[in-house]
Length: 237
Length: 259
Image (spheres, rainbow over the protein chains, first blue to last red):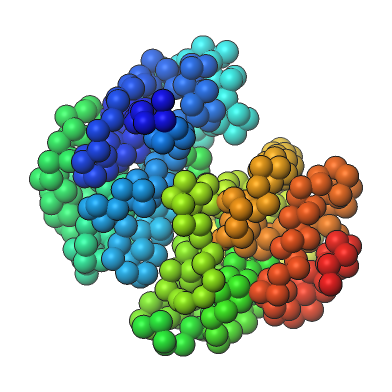
């Protein structure tokens, strides 16, 4: 039992795709359990038993269930150090952690809201999302009633600022953590993949093309993006 | 590089500002401290913006690097310097450490900050002239933080948002009690950054929430508070406060019976 390696993946979901890339980069075999978020399978009791917040990705390795995309990437890198993707010195490793925060707080969260406003729509049965913990339930309820314009413009501005920060960094460094390709690049790539060309600066486009050429990115490029709720936006500065 | 001087810019040893101070003392790394008075909003003034254009404390400067995110900053301190390890060696326990820190950073601490700042800071702005508020807001670089300060200065935080924050703080405290039933520290058998980050925000529980947090209602959290407060490193960090905060840490130790 403990030797099973399961990856709970939602096709077309950026944070889940980041874990998918990492598993390929680390040359790990796993059992793929697909979760269809367009049919709200992440709200089924069977999946909530894996992650009670109803979010992909999740992995079950060594008999333990791990959730939260960025922390799964960190864990995979520490548990399977070859090839090393965590940054080669303390400065690079700090940068990896800081990008992890930026992606979750300012990118995945904001992009999910904007995508939902533009293309969302399918509504699960109320009893399905009533199974979620209060903060996730509240987020879904706000999605169904429609996010207020002020929140959407704040989300757009927050995403644009975070992208500008990445663009500026990549004008001076080949990769998000500095000289080497790391799990920070793995984390951000599937999100940038979803953005319109106009939202990618020149440095980000060039960085994107380098990762898109890696064999590990092939699966992401094949999956059409699916719209769902991401992490919660910050509530208080 | 680790031989170069560390410069740390913080407010009091409280919440995010407390993280690097407590962490550096636990790691036994010498550093130069620069006090940034959030009470006068010095973190929005040009002198500090020259160090961190984002206008947030803490900031840590080491060699050519300026670090501005408090939780990654703690990982950096543990990573870059000699001293007692502050992260578990086991990757699964590290995952747990980061998971707890994220719950604190993304949900519990912002909720506590909302409740506390609305109780303490919002009333202070009632008499502040409008022009003065506008001038203060104009200095804040980050639009989302500017919006938070605006709500505070106008005492306009929706009551339901404050109620939700109180729920999150209560839920966060219940989570800590539950996690501490399984192990003496938050990320397992050893003291780690998860404990430092949580102590920076919750060191005052014995005096601030005596009805909810005590040896009978939350015995595991209570014992953890005593274990952490007994640590010389944390005590040295809390002693860096300018008055109220150090006194509050001392009061907490007195209530816990920690020397």
